[in-house]
Length: 177
Image (cartoon, rainbow, N blue to C red; front, side):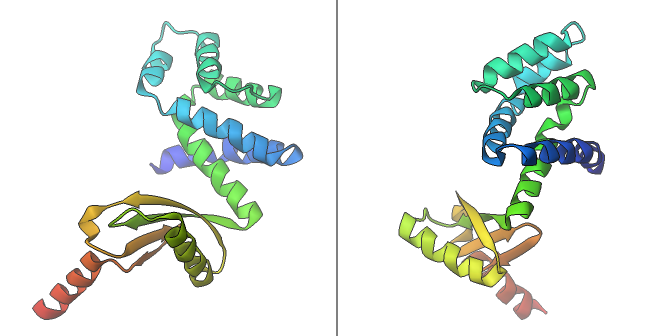
């Protein structure tokens, strides 16, 4: 969805510039609350109904966020709703999050593991990955039993696959070549 990313970019950049002037952590929390709400299908159906007024959509969004929103955040949300860009809100939030990470020298790391990792294992894996990728990482773990063993890591557009499944696929390719 390149079009959605193109639509979201100026909104995310504007939101980031405003957030930098205040408490970036507080703004990130507000953005996360809105991200959780914006992902709800029933809310999107309500917002897409032509009989629904923008003020009603705003009221439902802010109530569902269940968090006090900064007046500038409220203005931003009204702007997104009034311009009919609510469908782009998840992408806006994703790009905002990427800008926050870039400014603080941090990257998101998605770790796929065949088995759940305890805190000690996760700490060891993250420290090794930080050395490998050369930057601070904020990791989230997702269990994928089909990996059989090992892990697969995605950091931005880089991937590292040390899973048993990947090794077996490489062996299969080598044997059939």
